[in-house]
Length: 268
Image (cartoon, rainbow, N blue to C red; front, side, top):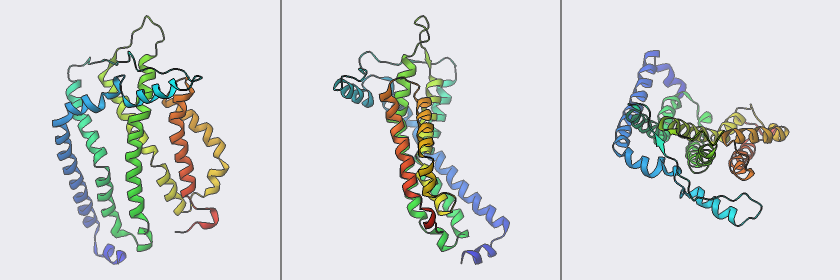
């Protein structure tokens, strides 16, 4: 059926279909972006700037956990406050617009994937579509889970360390709004994409590119590489915060190994 439909469609028919998909995506992005633009001041105050204050949820959790374990460095929420400054005349306006767009893209991630799937699906055979719906659902859930981990764990830990770090006490930290938002958006999206690792591994396993033995063979190498990655994301000497970032990433590695079939189980 898919082959017959493809034969009926010319090159320009495919272009028209792709254009229709892109138009729907753009319209949805514009609508959601405008809606977020209208409420962005409230989102900034209650969500985006929340990690700047000592009463953020992760900071309170760290304080309770370290206070109950004597050998851990004591974590305190008292006195922590990050004050942002704006040094460019138009920065606040452009950040208002750009943040509205990127948050709209996050919220519409499932819609964008679904529209792209609707464009690709007619060209696939039934056996090629097998498991795609489940993969689509899992991929969306993992992306949003990664975004939440980035927001509640990775970014606050990074902000807390870098905001308190001084190469010299004579050099005070004055953090610009541009720098804050660049780091915020980068870590949020990076974690969202990292959490897609199990889905990517599963797809490569279905295609026969990966098998479970690969993960078993290179597990020790992966642990070292993931520790280095966690240290780069959170360049702190505190082993507690390092492990907070490392453990979710390592669990993703093990989940990927579990989802990939064994070498003698690879099927299309």
